Length: 185
Length: 225
Image (tube, rainbow over all chains, first blue to last red; front, side, top):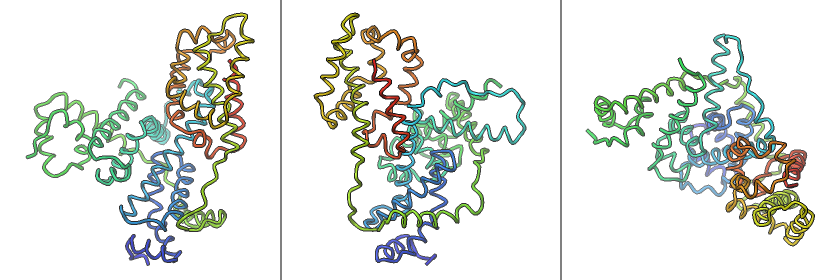
C-alpha cells in the first residue's frame, strides 16, 4: 500500500478502502502541518488546521477528479483553512481591541543565545503575520515548501504572472520589519 | 543568455539568493548586478532577509506528535459521524446566531448612516434616537445583514467616523473615552479590513457561545452613539 501512487490510493478509497485514506494522511501529514504552521505560527493552531484539512479531505475525496494533483488539492485546502483561521483570529482580536494599546515588553536584560533565537523566531512570525494574505501564501509556499510557481498558481487559483513580485515584496517586508526591530547596528 | 529587464530583476532576487533561479537566468542577473548599484543594494537586503530566515528554527513538535494525527483525525470523523458521501446534507447555517450578530452589526451601520444624514443637534437627541429605532425596526434580519455589508462597502467604519460632520455629532462621552482618536482609527482600519470582507456567518464561524456573547456585548456598546 505504501508504494502506491496518490491517484491509486484515491481510487482505492473511492471504492471503499478506508486504509487508503490512512496512507494519504501518513504521506502528507508533515507537509500539511508545516504549511499550516507557517501561516498561524503556533503549534496548537497548526494542529487544529492539520486535522481540519484531513477531515475536509475525507469528506470531499469521493468527488476528487484528478484535475490537479492530490498534492495541489490538499495544499489548496490547507491554505484556505489557514486563511479562514487567520480571519477568525482577526475578528477576535478586533473585539479585544483594548489589548492593542498595551505596551509591549521590550525587556532590559541582555538575552542569552537561546532567548535571542526565540526572539528572532518570534520576529519572523510577526513579520510573516503582517504580510497581506496573498504575499503570505506565496512566501510560505515558495520559501518553505519550495514549490514551483506553476504549482503555487494552481493552489491559489491565480496566474503565474505577478507571483515573483509577490514573493519579492514579501521578502523585503520581512527584511524591513526585522531590521526595524533590531534597530541601528 | 536571457535578457533581463531592469524592472524585473528585483523580482528574481529572492530566488537568485536562494539558488532557485531557472537555468540561464543566474548569469543574466549576475551580469546586471555588476552594472546596477540600486539592484545590488536590493540584493543585499534580500540576502539579509534570506539568511535570517534560514537561521530561524521553529520549535519542532516532539517526535511522537506526527504519530497522533491520524488517530485523532479518525476520532473526529467517528465523533461527527462523517461519511465520504458524494452529496452531503447542507451545513446548517447557525441562523439564530447570524440573526443575533446581524442585528447589532446592522444597527451600528445604520446608526452611522443616519448620523451622516441627521447629525445630532443638542436638544433633539430623543427624536433622533426614535428615528433610528424606527428605521432599524422596519428591517428584517436578512435586510439588516445586507445593510451591514452594503454600508461597510460604501461608508467604511473608519472613514465615516473620520468625517468632520459625524465627528461633531458624536456625543462628548464617547470622545472622552478616546474611542475615536486617530490611532484608534488606524488600529480599527487595520483590524477590520478583513472583517468587512466577511459575511456575518463567516465572522462568527468557529466562535463559542461565550465568545459570541462577549462580541455582541461589545457591538451593543459601540452601537449606543
